[in-house]
Length: 209
Image 1: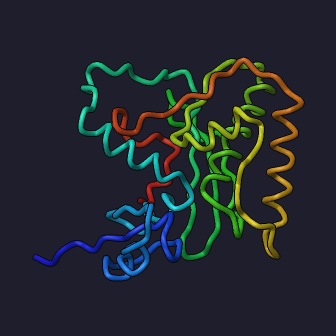
Image 2: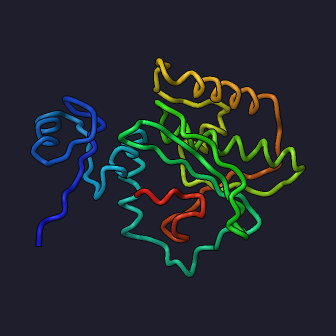
């Protein structure tokens, strides 16, 4: 049986990026003090990880060794909205959507947007849900599986490193509008972490892992 290919994310090394083999990864990290890297089973996971914090994945690995039993973890609230985003590593575009958890009904879908990132999509999805619920005068909670996006919403600022480039002005316009909305509005809705390890993928997942 052929050995399954691994993909390697390098956060800190001679060159940052996603590499298709250990030999290529090794060239980037061997002998580099403080090199940060990790293997993944799919390129999609590896690319997504590159956009996020290295320590998130180290901590997740440690937590899995002492994982709380599923029976001891409370289920998500059915009266809620769940959101997610997807990033195409080939086309470099992003889209996001939101679902009502109880009925699995899709409430909104936006994109694809060119030259964006998954974190941006996760952030815009949460803000879109907040604005939607405010119009409905609803206090339903919102679930997202992105700690990064949740922190951006909390800070009212998308801390993206994406450069404004030809072909993606709409993304930066949406980010500006989303940040302004957060600064100009208050809301009663809780923005909560969707615990994928315990509940599985949320209904807003695009199923592209």
